[in-house]
Structure formats: structure tokens, C-alpha cells
Length: 253
Image (cartoon, rainbow, N blue to C red; front, top):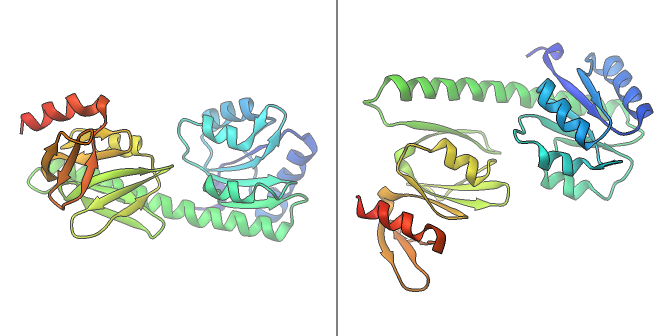
């Protein structure tokens, strides 16, 4: 990907800050912002309109915080670089998977380093998307082979046979995907997102924090509120709300 294909937007409630950052991006990084917004509400609309792959985001704004904005974004397919005059939000920024955290006034060298980092990761994401498309074609046109799915983690890209996935467990904004023959991989998607990816296969949501592959279920135990014993020996709880659905699925096996 060339530099000009970066699609950054600037979200900051201070007009001078937006102007300064825009000028610095052009002067030191050779890129231009495709749009600007002055708060949480206008920022969400801008992201939906422009579909950026990089967002420069202020933290304290008139109608909320940058964290509020990220929570409102339905699809977060962009990298975030926080720009702020406050340093006490650094740890929280990490929890929101920020690419970088730039203190105002922004240093040109730090800005260039952050943009270079974004470019590297966007190139990587493009490569992963191509692999996902290749896997999709394989699943669609070659029914004789086991279906596969692509999961991205901090270590890299994993092409997994769906039939080898034992269960999935929520971990805040991440999901632990337990795979036959290894412990688990930590996927940067919510359990709800993973559930959608696995829809149409042998997976059942048995609890708000758990999704199981029924092919790996060995026993359903009614005592202690109800739980599953997997073929691996693990015990997985079944919530009251999911109990009836779980029993119907098991009875059909």
C-alpha cells in the first residue's frame, strides 16, 4: 500500500489542533486527512461516512471522550492514534488497543513514527484479508475439504480447521479460541463476533461467556446449575437462559 492510500481522519474539538495536525501530516508524512470532526457525535458520523483506516482521536472533547466514540462505533475497522494534552489516559488507551498515544504539542518525529507504524499494520491487514478471501473460496467451492477460518492474533494469522475448534470463551474485548491439540489462541474479536463467524457450523452459545462445538460435548450434568463436560475433560457452565436450547441441540445429536 502506498502512503497516499492511507485514509486518516482527525477528531478534535479544538479547531487550532485540527489545523496544526493536518498541516503536520502533509508536511512531515506526505498525507492529507480525508475529513475532520469536532466531537463524539460528529466523529461517529464522519467515520461512518469516510470509512477511514486511521483515526487521530482527541480524548477530552465537549460532548464526551474519545473512548465514548470508540464504544459507539459499530464496526471498528481502523487504527487509532490518540492525540491529547493529558497523560493520565495512557493505560486506558492501551486497553482500547490504541496504535499510539501522542502528547500535545505533537512532536514531528513521533508523528512520523506513528504513521509509519500504521502503514505497516495496514499492509499486514490487507495481506490477512486476502488470505481470508482465499479461505472463503476454498470453503465455498471445495466441499470435500474441511472448512477453515482465519483468526488474527498478536502473533500473526492462524488458518484453523473449524472442526478442530473445541470451544470459545469471552475475555473482555477478546475471545479465547480453544483448539484441539493446543491450549488456545487469543483473538481480538468479541465472542459475539466470533459466534457470527462460526454461524452455520456445529456451535451453540451455552452461556453469555461461552460458545461450544457440540461435537466435543461428552456429557450434560444437571446439578450445580447445569454444566457441560467436554471430551477434553473441561467443565463449561450452561446458563439458565441457554439451558433449554442446549438440551434441544444435544437431543438431536
